[in-house]
Image (cartoon, rainbow, N blue to C red; front, side):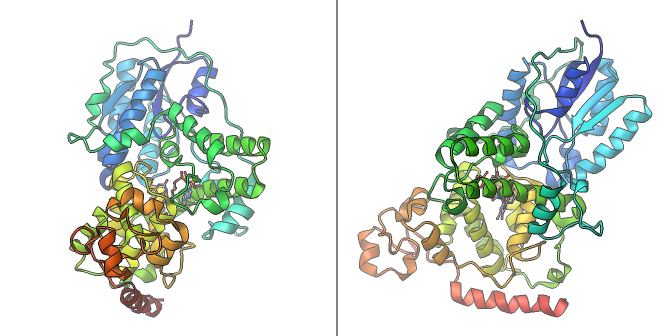
Length: 480
Ligand SMILES: Cc1cc2nc3c(=O)[nH]c(=O)nc-3n(C[C@H](O)[C@H](O)[C@H](O)COP(=O)(O)OP(=O)(O)OC[C@H]3O[C@@H](n4cnc5c(N)ncnc54)[C@H](O)[C@@H]3O)c2cc1C
C-alpha cells in the first residue's frame, strides 16, 4: 500500500493516456489527488468564452468519470487555491503539465518558486507540444519568424516527436478528508440553452477525441492535402477542440495518423501535409511564447497607424450574425454560431472580409471567435487573426485580399456548404448561389429569394471596398 500522495493539477491535459504528469506520479508510487481549478481571475481578459466553457464542462465530466469521481473542483486564483489545498490534504507534492499562455506562464513560474520555497515537491512536464518553444532556434540563436524554415530546418531537424505513452494500468487515489466540491460549482454551463446543436455535433472528452480522429482517418485522410480546403467535404479532422483541451495529445495525433497512413496506403503527401498542419499549431505556440504581446499588439508595428473603420458596430453585428449578404461568409458565421467551429478556409474568408473589406480591427474578430469557438486557443487564434490581417509573422500580405465570391465558387462549387447553413438560398441554382446580388430577378423569384427581405443585400461592394482597403494599406508603407 502506498503512502506517498501527490496532487495532479489537470489543466489543458484532460486525459489519462499520454499524460506525463500522471505517469510520473504513478510510476513513482504516489497515490493521487486529481484537481481542476477554474482560474478566471488570473486569466482576466482571456478567461474562457461561452462555447469553451460548455466544452470544458463536458470534458471535465468525462475525465472525472474516468478518474472514478475522485476529482476535486475549485474556483479561484490558482496561486491561492493550490497552497491551501496542499495544506488541507496534507500532501507535499504537486505535478502538472505545462501551459504556454503568457498569463499562465507568469502565474506558474511564481507559484512553482513559492511552493519550492515551502519545501513542496513540484515537477512539471510537456504534454501538449511536439517541440518545446525553447528547443527550436535559428543558427544565430534567435527565434524563427517564418513557418517553413521553423518547421523544416528547425523542428523536424531537432527530433522526431516522441512516442505517446499508454495510460497507467492502475491508479491509486489518496485518502483524504478534503471537500471535493462539485463540477457544477464552476458554473460553466450557460443559463440559456443555446448549445443543443453543439451537443449533436461533438463528444467532448478523451473517448470522443479518439473516435473523432479515427473517423477522420477512415473517411477523410485520403485526399487531405487538396480537399482540406473544401468546406463542403469531410476532409478535415475537426480535432482542434480535443487538442486544445488536451483530451488527446499532438504526439498521439501525429503517430496515430502516420501509423494509420502507412498501414492503409494513404499517400505521403496527405500524411505529411496533415502533420505540417500540426506544425502550424506548434508555430502558433512558438510565436506566443517568444512574442507574448501578439495576443493584442500588432506583430508588425507598422500596422499601429492603420486607419481602422471607426463606424464599425452595425457592420460588425451583421458579420457576427451571418447577415452580410455574402453567402460563403454567412454560412461560415452561422456554422460557427451553431456548432462552435468553422472550417479553416472559411475562417480565412470571413476574417478577410471583416478586416479588409469592412476595415474592422482584427481584435473584434479575435474576440468574437474567442467567445464562439469550442477550439478557441490563445496561440492559434491570435496568430491566425494577425495572419489574416497581414500584421502577423509570416502573414498573408495585406494586398492579397480574398474575393469571397470566387473563393466560394472555387471551394464550395456546388453550393452544398452554403445550402447547409443558409437555408434561405437552398433553391438557388449552383451558378448563382454565391452571388445572389448578380442573379437575374426571375431566377431569384423562382428560388423564393427577395433580396433585402428574406436574404440581405451585400453589406459592401466587394470591388470598391477592396480599393479602399488597398488605399488604407498605403499608411503602413509610410510607417515602415
Ligand atoms: C481567423 C482564424 C482563427 C483561428 N482560430 C483558431 C483557434 O482559436 N484555435 C485553433 O485551434 N485554431 C484556430 N485557427 C486555425 C484553424 O482554422 C483550425 O485549427 C482548424 O480549422 C481546426 O480544424 P481541424 O481540426 O479540422 O483542422 P485539420 O485541418 O484537421 O488540422 C489538424 C490540426 O492542425 C492544427 N491546425 C490546422 N490548421 C492550423 C492553422 N492554420 N493554425 C494553427 N493550427 C492549425 C489544428 O490543431 C488542427 O486541429 C484559426 C484560423 C483562422 C484563419
